[in-house]
Amino acid sequence: MPTLVLLPGLAGDAQMWRSQVDALAKWRPVVTDVHSRHDSIPEMASALLSEHDGDLVLCGASMGGMLAMEVARQAPERIAGLALLGTNANPETPAMRDLREAAIILFEQGRLAEVIEPNVAMAFHPDHARDDALVNAYLEFVYRAGAAQLVAQNRAVIARPDARNHLPTVRCPTLVMCGDTDRLAPLMHSQEIASLIPGAQLVIVPRCGHMLTMERPAFVNATLAQWLGSLA
Image: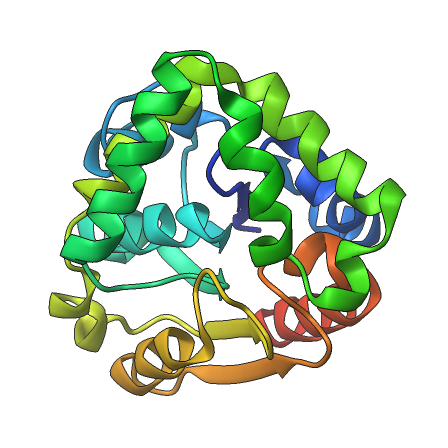
């Protein structure tokens, strides 16, 4: 059976996949942390391939989706399935680069809260942004990542490759999911990914922002379980 690897988003860790690890236990998922140990998306992808043998099913959220697409570019013959959640295949835009560079300056000055706490409104659907337990869980793992990781991972995202160039060559089953109110990776990006990958399935998650795995775990888990079952 292929190894199911869960790839967190920027500053994320296993906590953002907690509900999925339990719900998808029959597929024995593992959560990678290569994004916290390497400086670029291509280096992260190479490390993931070296650390996991055999065929892989990759489930990546946000930056994790960018990483999953790069893994599929580097070793398409090893990818048995791709699930891409709330992500973007495009290279960084000048406007987003400027925003990230400004945030990096604040991170380097230790002013994390000035960037992270206002980001809650961007990361979650308005209904979920009022859920203190949910927001605190999100803030907990972002602060745990720390300034150095926030700087390094933002720089990796700024320099990410243009995945659109190779997506038409992807031949494995692909599931693309996006929250209907995702403000960080808007639906148009998932629609573009699904249009580029032959046979890709697009699922729009209702009443959901960018943090799909935490905001709508039951919906996400059921969709992933059905998709993983179809791979067998």
